[in-house]
Length: 223
Length: 298
Ligand SMILES: Nc1ncnc2c1ncn2[C@@H]1O[C@H](COP(=O)(O)OP(=O)(O)OP(=O)(O)O)[C@@H](O)[C@H]1O
Ligand SMILES: [Mg+2]
Image (cartoon, rainbow over all chains, first blue to last red; front, top):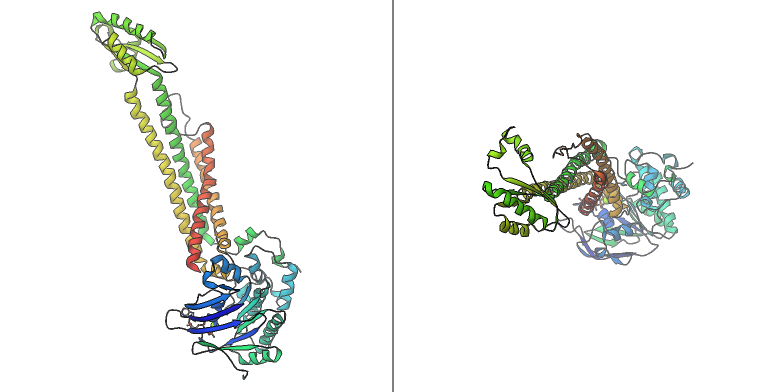
Protein backbone atom coordinates (compact mmCIF):
# COMPACT_ATOMS: atom_id res chain seq x y z
CA UNK A 1 0.00 0.00 0.00
CA UNK A 2 2.62 2.45 1.15
CA UNK A 3 6.29 1.76 0.96
CA UNK A 4 9.37 3.83 1.62
CA UNK A 5 12.65 2.94 -0.08
CA UNK A 6 15.75 4.61 1.34
CA UNK A 7 13.78 7.79 1.87
CA UNK A 8 15.44 10.90 3.21
CA UNK A 9 13.84 14.25 3.88
CA UNK A 10 15.20 17.62 4.87
CA UNK A 11 13.44 20.98 5.16
CA UNK A 12 16.59 22.70 4.01
CA UNK A 13 18.89 22.23 6.99
CA UNK A 14 20.27 18.82 7.91
CA UNK A 15 18.36 15.64 7.12
CA UNK A 16 15.38 15.25 9.40
CA UNK A 17 14.75 11.70 8.27
CA UNK A 18 17.27 9.53 6.53
CA UNK A 19 17.51 6.07 5.11
CA UNK A 20 13.92 5.15 5.87
CA UNK A 21 12.81 1.86 4.36
CA UNK A 22 9.57 0.20 5.33
CA UNK A 23 6.32 -1.20 4.01
CA UNK A 24 2.79 -0.85 5.37
CA UNK A 25 1.00 -4.05 4.49
CA UNK A 26 -2.74 -4.00 3.78
CA UNK A 27 -4.76 -4.45 6.94
CA UNK A 28 -1.87 -3.69 9.27
CA UNK A 29 -2.03 -1.40 12.31
CA UNK A 30 1.06 0.69 13.03
CA UNK A 31 1.90 3.27 15.62
CA UNK A 32 4.53 5.89 14.89
CA UNK A 33 6.17 7.34 17.93
CA UNK A 34 9.07 9.53 18.85
CA UNK A 35 9.78 12.75 20.71
CA UNK A 36 8.20 16.00 19.67
CA UNK A 37 9.98 17.42 16.64
CA UNK A 38 11.37 14.02 15.64
CA UNK A 39 9.50 14.11 12.35
CA UNK A 40 6.29 12.15 12.85
CA UNK A 41 4.13 14.66 11.01
CA UNK A 42 6.80 14.94 8.33
CA UNK A 43 6.74 11.17 7.85
CA UNK A 44 2.96 11.23 7.43
CA UNK A 45 3.17 14.12 4.98
CA UNK A 46 5.54 12.03 2.88
CA UNK A 47 2.96 9.25 3.01
CA UNK A 48 0.20 11.38 1.51
CA UNK A 49 2.37 13.22 -1.01
CA UNK A 50 2.25 16.60 0.64
CA UNK A 51 6.03 16.39 0.75
CA UNK A 52 8.26 14.79 -1.86
CA UNK A 53 11.32 12.95 -0.50
CA UNK A 54 14.64 14.69 -1.03
CA UNK A 55 16.08 11.30 -1.90
CA UNK A 56 14.81 7.74 -2.16
CA UNK A 57 11.34 6.71 -3.28
CA UNK A 58 7.89 6.76 -1.71
CA UNK A 59 5.50 4.33 -3.40
CA UNK A 60 1.74 4.89 -2.95
CA UNK A 61 -0.56 2.25 -4.38
CA UNK A 62 2.27 0.95 -6.60
CA UNK A 63 3.16 4.38 -7.97
CA UNK A 64 6.22 6.49 -7.24
CA UNK A 65 4.97 9.82 -5.87
CA UNK A 66 7.41 11.77 -8.02
CA UNK A 67 5.65 10.48 -11.13
CA UNK A 68 2.20 11.60 -9.97
CA UNK A 69 0.55 14.60 -11.62
CA UNK A 70 -1.36 17.06 -9.44
CA UNK A 71 -4.61 15.37 -10.41
CA UNK A 72 -3.12 11.96 -9.59
CA UNK A 73 -2.19 13.25 -6.15
CA UNK A 74 -5.81 14.42 -5.66
CA UNK A 75 -7.12 11.00 -6.71
CA UNK A 76 -4.64 9.20 -4.47
CA UNK A 77 -5.70 11.28 -1.46
CA UNK A 78 -9.29 10.19 -1.97
CA UNK A 79 -8.09 6.67 -1.12
CA UNK A 80 -6.30 7.82 2.03
CA UNK A 81 -8.17 9.10 5.07
CA UNK A 82 -6.10 11.65 6.93
CA UNK A 83 -6.61 12.97 10.44
CA UNK A 84 -4.43 16.07 10.64
CA UNK A 85 -2.75 17.14 13.85
CA UNK A 86 -4.58 20.48 13.56
CA UNK A 87 -7.73 18.98 12.01
CA UNK A 88 -7.83 21.32 8.97
CA UNK A 89 -11.46 22.35 8.78
CA UNK A 90 -13.06 25.11 6.77
CA UNK A 91 -14.25 27.43 9.50
CA UNK A 92 -17.06 29.00 7.47
CA UNK A 93 -18.83 25.68 6.90
CA UNK A 94 -20.80 23.59 9.36
CA UNK A 95 -19.36 20.45 10.89
CA UNK A 96 -21.60 18.29 8.71
CA UNK A 97 -20.52 20.15 5.58
CA UNK A 98 -16.87 19.78 6.62
CA UNK A 99 -17.33 16.07 7.13
CA UNK A 100 -18.87 15.77 3.66
CA UNK A 101 -16.03 17.76 2.08
CA UNK A 102 -14.18 14.77 0.57
CA UNK A 103 -17.44 13.92 -1.22
CA UNK A 104 -18.16 17.49 -2.19
CA UNK A 105 -14.80 18.07 -3.85
CA UNK A 106 -15.07 14.90 -5.90
CA UNK A 107 -18.56 15.93 -7.09
CA UNK A 108 -20.17 13.00 -5.36
CA UNK A 109 -23.13 12.96 -3.00
CA UNK A 110 -22.93 11.60 0.51
CA UNK A 111 -26.11 9.84 1.50
CA UNK A 112 -27.94 11.46 4.39
CA UNK A 113 -28.14 8.08 6.10
CA UNK A 114 -24.38 7.55 5.94
CA UNK A 115 -23.79 11.00 7.32
CA UNK A 116 -26.14 10.42 10.20
CA UNK A 117 -24.61 7.04 10.98
CA UNK A 118 -21.15 8.54 10.92
CA UNK A 119 -22.12 11.45 13.16
CA UNK A 120 -23.67 8.97 15.55
CA UNK A 121 -20.56 6.77 15.44
CA UNK A 122 -18.37 9.66 16.62
CA UNK A 123 -21.11 10.98 18.93
CA UNK A 124 -21.52 14.37 17.27
CA UNK A 125 -25.11 14.25 16.00
CA UNK A 126 -26.13 17.20 18.12
CA UNK A 127 -23.31 19.33 16.68
CA UNK A 128 -23.94 18.79 12.97
CA UNK A 129 -24.79 22.46 12.45
CA UNK A 130 -22.01 23.87 14.62
CA UNK A 131 -19.07 25.71 13.08
CA UNK A 132 -15.63 24.16 13.74
CA UNK A 133 -14.34 27.06 15.89
CA UNK A 134 -17.24 26.42 18.28
CA UNK A 135 -16.12 22.83 18.98
CA UNK A 136 -13.93 21.52 21.77
CA UNK A 137 -10.58 19.92 20.94
CA UNK A 138 -11.91 16.40 21.40
CA UNK A 139 -15.00 17.09 19.32
CA UNK A 140 -12.83 18.46 16.55
CA UNK A 141 -10.63 15.39 16.60
CA UNK A 142 -13.59 13.02 16.44
CA UNK A 143 -15.02 15.06 13.57
CA UNK A 144 -11.65 14.90 11.81
CA UNK A 145 -11.68 11.13 12.16
CA UNK A 146 -15.21 10.99 10.78
CA UNK A 147 -14.18 13.08 7.78
CA UNK A 148 -11.16 10.83 7.22
CA UNK A 149 -13.30 7.72 6.92
CA UNK A 150 -16.30 9.13 5.07
CA UNK A 151 -15.10 8.15 1.60
CA UNK A 152 -14.29 4.63 2.79
CA UNK A 153 -10.51 4.88 2.24
CA UNK A 154 -8.12 1.95 2.13
CA UNK A 155 -5.61 3.64 4.41
CA UNK A 156 -6.07 5.87 7.44
CA UNK A 157 -3.25 8.10 8.59
CA UNK A 158 -3.88 9.79 11.94
CA UNK A 159 -1.56 12.43 13.33
CA UNK A 160 -1.96 12.68 17.12
CA UNK A 161 -5.68 11.86 17.00
CA UNK A 162 -5.73 11.90 20.81
CA UNK A 163 -3.53 14.97 21.14
CA UNK A 164 -5.79 17.08 23.33
CA UNK A 165 -8.40 14.81 24.81
CA UNK A 166 -8.67 13.08 28.17
CA UNK A 167 -7.98 9.38 28.68
CA UNK A 168 -11.66 8.49 28.37
CA UNK A 169 -11.91 10.17 24.99
CA UNK A 170 -8.57 8.73 23.87
CA UNK A 171 -9.95 5.29 24.48
CA UNK A 172 -13.08 6.07 22.48
CA UNK A 173 -11.01 7.28 19.54
CA UNK A 174 -8.74 4.23 19.81
CA UNK A 175 -11.81 2.01 19.78
CA UNK A 176 -12.99 3.71 16.56
CA UNK A 177 -9.58 3.10 14.97
CA UNK A 178 -9.53 -0.52 16.08
CA UNK A 179 -13.00 -1.02 14.60
CA UNK A 180 -11.80 0.43 11.31
CA UNK A 181 -8.78 -1.89 11.35
CA UNK A 182 -11.07 -4.86 11.94
CA UNK A 183 -12.99 -3.74 8.85
CA UNK A 184 -9.74 -4.27 6.94
CA UNK A 185 -8.32 -0.75 6.78
CA UNK A 186 -4.59 -0.13 6.96
CA UNK A 187 -3.91 2.19 9.87
CA UNK A 188 -0.98 4.35 10.89
CA UNK A 189 -1.27 6.45 14.02
CA UNK A 190 1.36 8.97 15.08
CA UNK A 191 1.33 9.45 18.83
CA UNK A 192 3.60 9.83 21.81
CA UNK A 193 1.03 8.43 24.19
CA UNK A 194 2.63 5.13 25.23
CA UNK A 195 -0.37 4.19 27.34
CA UNK A 196 -2.52 4.36 24.24
CA UNK A 197 -0.14 2.03 22.43
CA UNK A 198 -0.22 -0.45 25.32
CA UNK A 199 -3.96 -0.30 25.37
CA UNK A 200 -4.13 -0.98 21.63
CA UNK A 201 -1.74 -3.87 21.83
CA UNK A 202 -4.09 -5.51 24.27
CA UNK A 203 -6.83 -5.42 21.63
CA UNK A 204 -5.09 -6.06 18.33
CA UNK A 205 -1.83 -6.87 16.63
CA UNK A 206 -0.20 -3.47 16.44
CA UNK A 207 3.37 -2.72 15.47
CA UNK A 208 5.31 0.27 16.69
CA UNK A 209 7.64 2.37 14.57
CA UNK A 210 9.95 4.64 16.49
CA UNK A 211 11.76 7.66 15.11
CA UNK A 212 15.18 8.02 16.73
CA UNK A 213 18.35 9.59 15.39
CA UNK A 214 16.63 10.42 12.09
CA UNK A 215 15.82 6.77 11.47
CA UNK A 216 12.48 5.00 11.61
CA UNK A 217 12.82 1.64 13.30
CA UNK A 218 10.48 -1.13 14.28
CA UNK A 219 10.39 -1.18 18.07
CA UNK A 220 10.65 -4.47 19.92
CA UNK A 221 7.75 -6.11 21.66
CA UNK A 222 8.91 -4.64 24.95
CA UNK A 223 6.94 -1.55 25.71
CA UNK B 1 -33.53 14.37 11.60
CA UNK B 2 -32.34 15.57 8.25
CA UNK B 3 -28.87 16.99 8.11
CA UNK B 4 -27.93 20.17 6.30
CA UNK B 5 -25.75 18.32 3.81
CA UNK B 6 -28.69 16.12 2.89
CA UNK B 7 -30.25 19.13 1.19
CA UNK B 8 -29.97 18.66 -2.52
CA UNK B 9 -27.44 21.23 -3.66
CA UNK B 10 -26.01 21.09 -7.14
CA UNK B 11 -22.27 20.37 -7.23
CA UNK B 12 -21.74 23.79 -8.84
CA UNK B 13 -23.42 25.65 -5.99
CA UNK B 14 -21.39 23.74 -3.48
CA UNK B 15 -18.21 24.53 -5.36
CA UNK B 16 -19.05 28.17 -4.66
CA UNK B 17 -19.72 27.45 -0.99
CA UNK B 18 -16.36 25.83 -0.24
CA UNK B 19 -14.66 29.19 -0.73
CA UNK B 20 -15.79 31.71 1.87
CA UNK B 21 -17.67 34.79 0.64
CA UNK B 22 -15.23 37.50 -0.33
CA UNK B 23 -16.68 40.47 1.52
CA UNK B 24 -16.81 44.12 0.57
CA UNK B 25 -14.19 44.06 -2.22
CA UNK B 26 -16.29 41.76 -4.41
CA UNK B 27 -18.16 44.62 -6.05
CA UNK B 28 -14.88 46.13 -7.32
CA UNK B 29 -14.68 43.50 -10.04
CA UNK B 30 -18.29 44.15 -10.98
CA UNK B 31 -17.64 47.88 -11.04
CA UNK B 32 -14.51 47.50 -13.18
CA UNK B 33 -16.28 45.29 -15.68
CA UNK B 34 -19.19 47.75 -15.77
CA UNK B 35 -17.01 50.81 -16.34
CA UNK B 36 -14.96 49.05 -19.00
CA UNK B 37 -18.02 47.89 -20.87
CA UNK B 38 -19.52 51.37 -20.69
CA UNK B 39 -16.38 52.76 -22.35
CA UNK B 40 -16.41 49.92 -24.82
CA UNK B 41 -19.91 50.83 -26.01
CA UNK B 42 -18.65 54.28 -27.00
CA UNK B 43 -15.52 52.97 -28.66
CA UNK B 44 -17.79 50.61 -30.58
CA UNK B 45 -20.15 53.43 -31.57
CA UNK B 46 -17.16 55.47 -32.70
CA UNK B 47 -15.73 52.76 -34.91
CA UNK B 48 -19.09 51.81 -36.41
CA UNK B 49 -19.93 55.46 -37.10
CA UNK B 50 -16.58 56.22 -38.68
CA UNK B 51 -16.89 53.08 -40.78
CA UNK B 52 -20.26 54.28 -42.02
CA UNK B 53 -18.89 57.75 -42.60
CA UNK B 54 -15.97 56.47 -44.66
CA UNK B 55 -18.40 54.51 -46.81
CA UNK B 56 -20.83 57.37 -47.19
CA UNK B 57 -18.14 59.82 -48.23
CA UNK B 58 -16.57 57.41 -50.65
CA UNK B 59 -19.91 56.57 -52.21
CA UNK B 60 -21.38 60.02 -52.43
CA UNK B 61 -18.22 61.51 -53.83
CA UNK B 62 -17.51 58.67 -56.16
CA UNK B 63 -20.90 58.98 -57.86
CA UNK B 64 -20.35 62.46 -59.22
CA UNK B 65 -17.51 64.21 -60.97
CA UNK B 66 -17.07 67.71 -62.32
CA UNK B 67 -15.48 68.86 -65.54
CA UNK B 68 -14.09 72.33 -65.31
CA UNK B 69 -13.51 74.21 -68.52
CA UNK B 70 -11.26 77.23 -68.58
CA UNK B 71 -10.82 78.61 -72.06
CA UNK B 72 -10.63 81.93 -73.87
CA UNK B 73 -14.10 83.47 -74.32
CA UNK B 74 -14.45 82.58 -77.99
CA UNK B 75 -13.44 78.99 -77.33
CA UNK B 76 -15.84 78.30 -74.44
CA UNK B 77 -18.90 77.32 -76.45
CA UNK B 78 -16.93 75.25 -78.97
CA UNK B 79 -15.10 73.31 -76.29
CA UNK B 80 -18.26 72.87 -74.22
CA UNK B 81 -19.92 71.27 -77.22
CA UNK B 82 -16.88 69.08 -77.76
CA UNK B 83 -16.98 67.96 -74.11
CA UNK B 84 -20.70 67.20 -74.24
CA UNK B 85 -20.18 65.24 -77.45
CA UNK B 86 -17.37 63.25 -75.84
CA UNK B 87 -19.44 62.51 -72.76
CA UNK B 88 -22.35 61.37 -74.90
CA UNK B 89 -20.20 58.68 -76.45
CA UNK B 90 -18.44 57.57 -73.25
CA UNK B 91 -19.79 54.37 -71.70
CA UNK B 92 -20.41 54.29 -67.94
CA UNK B 93 -21.96 57.71 -67.60
CA UNK B 94 -25.49 57.90 -66.24
CA UNK B 95 -26.06 61.56 -67.02
CA UNK B 96 -24.25 64.81 -67.55
CA UNK B 97 -25.26 68.43 -67.67
CA UNK B 98 -23.59 71.77 -68.17
CA UNK B 99 -24.45 74.15 -65.34
CA UNK B 100 -26.00 77.36 -66.60
CA UNK B 101 -24.98 80.78 -65.36
CA UNK B 102 -27.70 80.94 -62.72
CA UNK B 103 -26.55 77.68 -61.16
CA UNK B 104 -22.93 78.74 -61.28
CA UNK B 105 -23.87 81.98 -59.61
CA UNK B 106 -25.74 80.07 -56.89
CA UNK B 107 -22.68 77.93 -56.31
CA UNK B 108 -20.41 80.92 -55.97
CA UNK B 109 -22.79 83.09 -54.01
CA UNK B 110 -21.70 81.92 -50.58
CA UNK B 111 -18.17 83.06 -51.36
CA UNK B 112 -18.67 86.20 -53.40
CA UNK B 113 -22.11 87.44 -52.37
CA UNK B 114 -25.20 87.97 -54.54
CA UNK B 115 -25.17 90.01 -57.71
CA UNK B 116 -21.97 88.54 -59.01
CA UNK B 117 -21.52 89.45 -62.70
CA UNK B 118 -20.75 85.93 -63.83
CA UNK B 119 -20.64 86.94 -67.49
CA UNK B 120 -17.95 89.53 -66.85
CA UNK B 121 -15.64 87.22 -64.96
CA UNK B 122 -13.39 84.51 -66.32
CA UNK B 123 -15.26 81.88 -64.37
CA UNK B 124 -14.81 78.35 -65.66
CA UNK B 125 -17.74 76.47 -67.12
CA UNK B 126 -18.81 73.55 -64.95
CA UNK B 127 -20.19 70.28 -66.28
CA UNK B 128 -21.58 67.82 -63.82
CA UNK B 129 -21.14 64.11 -64.57
CA UNK B 130 -23.01 61.34 -62.75
CA UNK B 131 -21.34 57.99 -62.83
CA UNK B 132 -23.15 54.99 -64.30
CA UNK B 133 -22.99 51.32 -63.51
CA UNK B 134 -20.39 50.02 -64.31
CA UNK B 135 -18.51 53.31 -63.91
CA UNK B 136 -16.55 54.96 -66.71
CA UNK B 137 -12.79 54.70 -66.91
CA UNK B 138 -11.69 58.08 -65.60
CA UNK B 139 -8.15 57.89 -67.04
CA UNK B 140 -9.52 57.12 -70.52
CA UNK B 141 -12.02 59.96 -70.28
CA UNK B 142 -9.30 62.34 -69.15
CA UNK B 143 -7.18 61.49 -72.22
CA UNK B 144 -10.09 61.87 -74.64
CA UNK B 145 -11.00 65.21 -73.10
CA UNK B 146 -7.43 66.40 -73.42
CA UNK B 147 -7.63 65.65 -77.15
CA UNK B 148 -11.10 67.14 -77.78
CA UNK B 149 -11.11 70.10 -75.39
CA UNK B 150 -7.70 71.16 -74.13
CA UNK B 151 -9.19 73.53 -71.54
CA UNK B 152 -11.18 70.79 -69.80
CA UNK B 153 -10.18 69.30 -66.48
CA UNK B 154 -11.88 66.23 -65.03
CA UNK B 155 -12.14 66.32 -61.26
CA UNK B 156 -13.52 63.06 -59.91
CA UNK B 157 -12.90 64.18 -56.29
CA UNK B 158 -10.31 61.47 -55.54
CA UNK B 159 -8.00 64.23 -54.44
CA UNK B 160 -9.99 65.11 -51.35
CA UNK B 161 -12.02 61.96 -51.06
CA UNK B 162 -8.97 59.88 -50.28
CA UNK B 163 -7.72 61.81 -47.21
CA UNK B 164 -11.26 61.98 -45.82
CA UNK B 165 -11.86 58.29 -46.24
CA UNK B 166 -8.42 57.62 -44.82
CA UNK B 167 -9.09 59.76 -41.76
CA UNK B 168 -12.38 57.99 -41.20
CA UNK B 169 -10.85 54.55 -41.41
CA UNK B 170 -8.01 55.65 -39.15
CA UNK B 171 -10.57 56.71 -36.55
CA UNK B 172 -12.23 53.36 -36.97
CA UNK B 173 -8.91 51.63 -36.38
CA UNK B 174 -8.39 53.69 -33.22
CA UNK B 175 -11.83 52.63 -32.04
CA UNK B 176 -11.03 48.96 -32.57
CA UNK B 177 -7.67 49.40 -30.83
CA UNK B 178 -9.46 51.03 -27.89
CA UNK B 179 -11.82 48.09 -27.64
CA UNK B 180 -8.86 45.69 -27.62
CA UNK B 181 -7.09 47.76 -24.96
CA UNK B 182 -10.21 47.96 -22.80
CA UNK B 183 -10.53 44.18 -23.04
CA UNK B 184 -6.88 43.66 -22.13
CA UNK B 185 -7.11 46.09 -19.21
CA UNK B 186 -10.16 44.25 -17.93
CA UNK B 187 -8.34 40.93 -18.20
CA UNK B 188 -5.38 42.39 -16.29
CA UNK B 189 -7.56 43.77 -13.51
CA UNK B 190 -9.53 40.59 -13.13
CA UNK B 191 -6.29 38.60 -13.05
CA UNK B 192 -5.04 40.78 -10.20
CA UNK B 193 -8.33 40.49 -8.32
CA UNK B 194 -8.39 36.72 -8.80
CA UNK B 195 -4.80 36.33 -7.64
CA UNK B 196 -5.58 38.39 -4.56
CA UNK B 197 -8.63 36.24 -3.82
CA UNK B 198 -6.59 33.06 -4.27
CA UNK B 199 -3.86 34.34 -1.97
CA UNK B 200 -6.42 35.32 0.68
CA UNK B 201 -7.86 31.83 0.55
CA UNK B 202 -4.54 29.97 0.55
CA UNK B 203 -5.47 28.01 3.69
CA UNK B 204 -8.88 27.02 2.32
CA UNK B 205 -7.21 25.87 -0.89
CA UNK B 206 -4.71 23.83 1.12
CA UNK B 207 -7.50 22.07 2.99
CA UNK B 208 -9.36 21.37 -0.25
CA UNK B 209 -6.24 19.86 -1.78
CA UNK B 210 -5.75 17.69 1.33
CA UNK B 211 -9.22 16.19 1.05
CA UNK B 212 -8.58 15.32 -2.59
CA UNK B 213 -9.80 18.30 -4.63
CA UNK B 214 -8.33 18.62 -8.10
CA UNK B 215 -7.05 21.99 -9.25
CA UNK B 216 -9.91 22.20 -11.72
CA UNK B 217 -12.45 21.90 -8.90
CA UNK B 218 -10.87 24.68 -6.86
CA UNK B 219 -10.38 26.86 -9.92
CA UNK B 220 -14.05 26.40 -10.80
CA UNK B 221 -15.17 28.01 -7.55
CA UNK B 222 -13.14 31.13 -8.32
CA UNK B 223 -13.78 31.17 -12.05
CA UNK B 224 -17.56 31.01 -11.58
CA UNK B 225 -17.46 33.79 -9.07
CA UNK B 226 -15.42 36.17 -11.21
CA UNK B 227 -17.22 35.30 -14.43
CA UNK B 228 -20.58 36.04 -12.83
CA UNK B 229 -19.30 39.32 -11.42
CA UNK B 230 -17.89 40.41 -14.78
CA UNK B 231 -21.11 39.38 -16.53
CA UNK B 232 -23.24 41.37 -14.10
CA UNK B 233 -21.00 44.43 -14.29
CA UNK B 234 -20.76 44.28 -18.07
CA UNK B 235 -24.53 43.96 -18.44
CA UNK B 236 -25.04 47.08 -16.34
CA UNK B 237 -22.25 48.92 -18.19
CA UNK B 238 -23.60 47.95 -21.61
CA UNK B 239 -27.12 49.02 -20.65
CA UNK B 240 -25.84 52.37 -19.39
CA UNK B 241 -23.73 52.86 -22.51
CA UNK B 242 -26.65 52.02 -24.80
CA UNK B 243 -28.90 54.47 -22.99
CA UNK B 244 -26.15 57.08 -23.36
CA UNK B 245 -25.81 56.47 -27.09
CA UNK B 246 -29.55 56.34 -27.64
CA UNK B 247 -29.89 59.66 -25.81
CA UNK B 248 -27.56 61.40 -28.29
CA UNK B 249 -29.38 63.82 -30.62
CA UNK B 250 -30.61 62.00 -33.72
CA UNK B 251 -28.55 62.32 -36.88
CA UNK B 252 -30.12 65.08 -38.97
CA UNK B 253 -30.17 65.43 -42.72
CA UNK B 254 -26.81 67.14 -42.73
CA UNK B 255 -25.45 63.92 -41.22
CA UNK B 256 -22.58 65.58 -39.45
CA UNK B 257 -19.94 63.41 -37.91
CA UNK B 258 -20.87 63.97 -34.26
CA UNK B 259 -24.59 63.54 -34.69
CA UNK B 260 -23.92 60.38 -36.70
CA UNK B 261 -22.36 58.74 -33.63
CA UNK B 262 -24.60 55.84 -32.73
CA UNK B 263 -25.84 52.50 -33.87
CA UNK B 264 -28.04 51.71 -36.83
CA UNK B 265 -29.93 48.55 -37.71
CA UNK B 266 -28.01 45.41 -36.79
CA UNK B 267 -25.36 47.65 -35.22
CA UNK B 268 -27.49 47.73 -32.07
CA UNK B 269 -26.65 44.04 -31.55
CA UNK B 270 -22.94 44.72 -31.13
CA UNK B 271 -23.20 46.20 -27.62
CA UNK B 272 -25.34 43.23 -26.60
CA UNK B 273 -22.37 40.99 -27.41
CA UNK B 274 -20.21 42.86 -24.89
CA UNK B 275 -21.45 41.25 -21.61
CA UNK B 276 -20.87 37.67 -22.83
CA UNK B 277 -17.54 38.80 -24.21
CA UNK B 278 -16.60 40.35 -20.85
CA UNK B 279 -17.65 37.12 -19.13
CA UNK B 280 -15.45 35.18 -21.53
CA UNK B 281 -12.49 37.46 -20.80
CA UNK B 282 -13.08 37.07 -17.05
CA UNK B 283 -13.42 33.31 -17.42
CA UNK B 284 -10.13 32.97 -19.30
CA UNK B 285 -8.25 35.41 -17.06
CA UNK B 286 -9.42 33.84 -13.79
CA UNK B 287 -8.82 30.33 -15.02
CA UNK B 288 -5.29 31.14 -16.06
CA UNK B 289 -4.60 32.98 -12.78
CA UNK B 290 -6.10 30.15 -10.74
CA UNK B 291 -4.08 27.34 -12.27
CA UNK B 292 -0.93 29.41 -12.02
CA UNK B 293 -1.55 30.35 -8.39
CA UNK B 294 -2.59 26.82 -7.40
CA UNK B 295 0.76 25.48 -8.53
CA UNK B 296 2.47 28.09 -6.37
CA UNK B 297 0.34 27.44 -3.32
CA UNK B 298 0.46 23.69 -2.87
N1 LIG C 1 7.62 23.50 6.87
C1 LIG C 1 8.71 23.35 7.63
N2 LIG C 1 9.83 24.04 7.36
C2 LIG C 1 10.92 23.88 8.09
N3 LIG C 1 11.02 23.06 9.14
C3 LIG C 1 9.93 22.34 9.47
C4 LIG C 1 8.72 22.45 8.73
N4 LIG C 1 7.81 21.62 9.26
C5 LIG C 1 8.43 21.02 10.31
N5 LIG C 1 9.70 21.45 10.42
C6 LIG C 1 10.66 21.00 11.45
O1 LIG C 1 10.85 19.61 11.29
C7 LIG C 1 10.93 18.99 12.54
C8 LIG C 1 9.92 17.84 12.61
O2 LIG C 1 8.62 18.40 12.55
P1 LIG C 1 7.36 17.44 12.67
O3 LIG C 1 6.17 18.31 12.62
O4 LIG C 1 7.47 16.38 11.67
O5 LIG C 1 7.56 16.86 14.13
P2 LIG C 1 6.61 15.89 14.95
O6 LIG C 1 7.37 14.65 15.25
O7 LIG C 1 5.31 15.73 14.27
O8 LIG C 1 6.42 16.71 16.28
P3 LIG C 1 5.13 16.78 17.24
O9 LIG C 1 5.13 15.53 18.07
O10 LIG C 1 5.39 18.00 18.10
O11 LIG C 1 3.94 16.94 16.37
C9 LIG C 1 10.69 20.06 13.58
O12 LIG C 1 11.94 20.42 14.12
C10 LIG C 1 10.12 21.20 12.82
O13 LIG C 1 10.54 22.43 13.36
MG1 LIG D 1 3.45 16.38 14.51
